[in-house]
Length: 555
Image 1 (cartoon, helix red, strand yellow):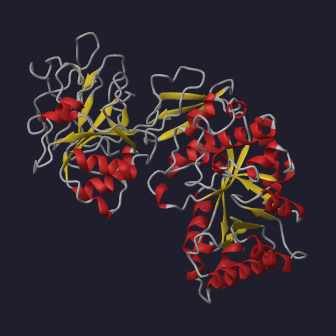
Image 2 (cartoon, helix red, strand yellow):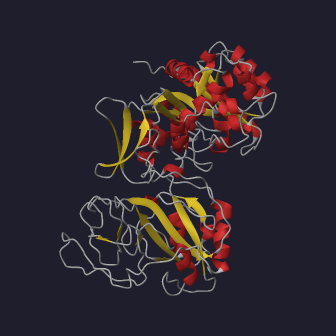
Image 3 (cartoon, one colour):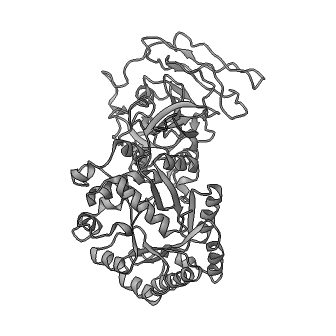
C-alpha cells in the first residue's frame, strides 16, 4: 500500500461501498460513495481511480478522487477521519470551474498530483471487486478498464495485464485506450500499451510542480497491509474485499486471506479470550461490510459479541443478526433513553416477545440520560421503570445507561432491588462515588475506550489505578461504532501504553474515531490491564468469565 505524501488529504473508506461508478461521477454518487449526507451534493464533477497492488494485482481499496480544492478541504474538515475498512481515499485538487473533469487533459493539476509509482486502474462503468483472475507474480502491472469490459458470473472484471519495465517501476498511462471487447462474456479482454503509455513519468512532487496542487494535509497513519505480511505482527488486510480466516498447520497463527486464497497478512495467535458486551452493530455504518467486521472481531480473539438494541426496530434487527451468526452474536432488546419519546402502548408487549427469544440475553440499553435530554425527563423515567419491571419479569440481565442522572437512576432501581437480575452499568463514564455505590449494590461496571478521555482524579481511570473495582465486577465492551480507544501520545502514562502490543495496534488500525469496531477489544483489555498493573491475558480471561456468567452463556 502506498503512503500518501504530505501534500495529500486522506480519508478512509471501503471500496466495496462504491458500487458502479462512472469515471466522471456526479455529486450525488460521490456523496453515496463516501457515505456522506446530501449536504455534500455541491462537490461538483469528480474523477475516481482505484489502485492495485504492484506484485499481486489485488485491488487494495484505494481510490483517488479529484475535486475542486476548496470543496475538498471542506469535505475533509467534516469527514476527514471517517473509515470504512481502513484504506485511504486520496483527494487531489481540481480546476474549480471546470464543468467536466478529465484526469489526463482537462485537469493538469490533478494529473500531476495523481502520478504514482503504484499501478492505477481507471474505473468507468465497471468496478473491480474481485481480482482472482489476475496473474500473480512479482512484476508490476498496469491495466485500464473502460466501458464494455465483461464481467464474469462472479461479478469480477477479467483483464489481461501486461508488465511494465524501467526497473520494476510502473508507468501510468497518459492517453486513455479502450479495451477491445468481444461478444463472449467468457473471453479475457486484452490490450497492448502504446509507446506513449510506456513513457516514464517524473516524480509528482518534483521541481516546478504548480503550487496550486498543494492541499491542506490531513492524514491518519496507515500501515502497509500487504507488503508487511511476513512480519511477526503483520497488519490485518482491511481492504474491504472478501476475507476468510484460517490457522496454519501448527495452530500458531491466523491468516487473513483475500478473495480466492491469495495470502494477505498475518496476526499473531489470538493472545486473549474476549467478549464484547456492547456493540451497536445495527448502526448504519456497518450496513455494507458487517461480515468483514465480524471477521476482524474473530481475528482479534473476540469470542462473542452482544449486539445492543436501542429501540424497538433496532432490537428486532439485533435479534435477526443473532440468527445470521448463531453462537457468536447475541443481543439485548430495549429502548434507549434518547428514543424514549418513541415509546407506544404496544412497545412493552413487543419487547417482552423479543426478550423471550433464544438469541436475546439481556434487557437494554435502557436508563436515563439527563445530559442531552433527547427525550423529556418524565418520559425517560417512565420508560426506564417499565423496562426494569420487564427485566424482573423475564429474569434477563439489565444493560443500563446512566448520564448525569445518578440520583434518579438509583431511586428507580432501589424500588426493585430485591427482584433485580444482574445489572451492568454500560459504558460507565461517571464519578468514583457513583461507581463505588453501584459496586456496593452488586452491579457490574462496563469499561470502553472512553478510558482515554478520563483524566480526572475522580473518574474511572483513577478507580483502576487504585484497584478499587473488583476484577469480578468488570466487563469490557467497545460500544462500537462509538468510544474509539485513542492511544495517541500523552493520552496515557507510558507504563500503560507499553502494555499495548503491536498486533493490537494494527487491529485498531481497522477502526477510527468515526467508526469503532469490536476488533478494538484487545487494546481496551490492554489499557485496563495497564491501569490496574495486571497482565492483559489475566484480565481478558477474568472479564470473559464474568461475561459468560452475567449473560448466562455457559454451555
